[in-house]
Structure formats: C-alpha cells, structure tokens
Length: 409
Ligand SMILES: [Zn+2]
Ligand SMILES: [Zn+2]
Image (cartoon, rainbow, N blue to C red; front, side, top):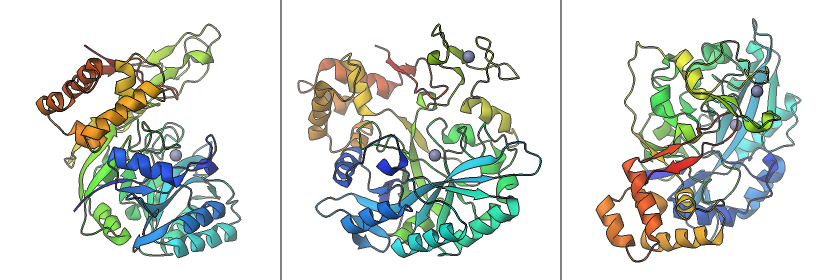
C-alpha cells in the first residue's frame, strides 16, 4: 500500500509557538493527505506523557487520536554536537530520532540522564567530548531496539550535518564507524533530491522529505512529505520500507522558497534596509559588501561545493509543491494566509477535491471542469499557472527568510 508520511514536527515545547492541539494536527493532515505524522518532541518527559494520555495504539508502533483518521509515529529532533579534531568550532548537527514504542523513549531518557544531558526542552542537546564518544552514544541509542532510526535532519541547511556552519567534507568525519548505520537523510526545505543527488556521500541513501513544522497551519503541515510503498501500517513495516528505499516519490518545497537557498543578508540586518543577495558568485570570504559582516552561505552554493560529476546517482521521483493557501492568498491579493477569505476558499476547494494532494494530481482540464463557477476565477487561474510552472520566488529564500511567491499570469 501507499502511505504519505511527514515525520518531522515540533510541539510548543520546542519554543517559538504555543501548544499545538493534536486535534488541529489531525484536521490539517486530512486536508493535506498525510497518513502518518511524526509527533515531534516525544523524548521530553512532559510531551511523552501528553502523547501517552491522548493517543491510542492503532497497530504496533503506530498511534491515533480517537475519532480521527490521521496516525502518528513517535519522533523527536535532537541536536548533537562534538569537538572534532582539526576544527576550531564544535560541529553541531540536527537529527531525527524515530522510536518503535514508548518503552524505547523511556530507555533513551535513561541514557540522556546517564550522559548528564538536560532533557528539558522539545529539541534537546547531546553534547559529546570527541568523535569516539559521539560514536559510542549513537551505538548506544541504536542498541535500544533494532528498529530505532537516527536520521540526519535538513542535511544542507546551516544546522545540518553538511551545512555551512560545519563545513565538513564528508559525513564520515562526524559519524566515524557509525556511518554505515546512516541509511536515510532528510532533504530539508531549501534542497531537493536533484540538488543532493550528485553529492557522493548522499548518493546511495534514502532521501525523505518532511515539513519540520512548528504549527498545525495549512501551509505548514505536509509542506514536504514522502510517499512510500509498504506492506502494512506498522512502525516496523514503515522503517523497513525506508531502509530499503521503497520511496515512490517525495513532495518537495521549491528549494528557492526555502529560507536558506541563497547567500546574503536580509534587509533588517542593515540600517538602510538594503537587501544583499548572491544568486551564483559570492565573495569568497563571505563578507557582506554592504556591512562587512559574515553572510549565511546558501544551500544552493553549499551543494555546489560538495557535488561531484562522477555520479552513479539513483533516480529519484519527486515533485515541487506550493501550499494551496499561499496560492489562494496570492490570487486574492491578500497578505495573510490566515485571512477568512483565504481559508473559506480553501475549504470550498476541499469540498470538491478530498485533499490538497488530490487537487495537484488532477489534470488541468478536470480542474477547470470541477472548479468553474464554484471558485473565484483568479484562484482557478493561479492554480493552473502553478500547474504549468508559471511562477517564481522573488526574491528566493535567503538568510532565514522564505522566498516570496510570484505567480505569472
Ligand atoms: Zn532542525
Ligand atoms: Zn550585510
């Protein structure tokens, strides 16, 4: 069977947002066509208790909220840092950890305690003295259960394993003997499988896409996801599909909409509000020509540094996706995707198509037939423009700022 999975999210415990209700997540999942959603932050004891209290077991390792069809898998993000020999700064990289059941989470909580790690926030840190200790700890996590999975998150963003803050030349510098246990990576919002396919370290790994969302909003959940072929809806079946790369396709954010696609400084860094963006060539020392301070290297340029032409790349199916509420807001010339006009148009379309993914997979003629006279003409025109690829992000995402959607008429 086919399953649409989105395995990276955060709760209010990860900071920045208020608590997010599981009910709201389930409602949005249905519209976005997501079958399985990563709970986010499950390692934190308070969050684990919330989840235990609210969720029921659907099948081995898969949970659900009574009265809703959406299902959950236990997931957290951890930040692992280590002092590597030959590097001035500590190497820091975000990782997803997937758990087969609540008992495994409790065992990892015991490990965190043993290592003296504070486990008091949604996305906790695991601080390692050196590469040997890091390796040992990763093996200890894996030894909790054969189906525990550690996945490098958003690999090319500044906080990712191969990102610009670390400047590693190979993931082996970080993982050492654990490298062969890394079987899956997350592409991240500012990259897609095409950009990553010629990076030798990543070529043979399963690539998955997740929303990494901190809210249940319609433009956040399922903004990236992965569709896998799997035998049944169980944790073990999903993990073995991922380990064997039974990915049918990933739905990707346009990398140029991602917050770290290009190199530069956004306008609020400068008193005169001038934006500095480098699309291709950039100053080698990365110093901003406007203010002289260091710029954030874009994922596009970081990928170019690591790509190699000797490629035996695996063909990967994927397509780019733009959240429908963003398309509607553009069509109606409204700034906020939360405006009533936008959401009511969205629900109107969802009465006709069962989910957003169903809409995008329908051909143009049928879209016109189904939406004509029921939905605002500008919205239909914008949806068709997106289908035809008549859009761009201008400026593209850079320095922590999302790319800005422009749909051409
Ligand atoms: Zn992260
Ligand atoms: Zn600057």
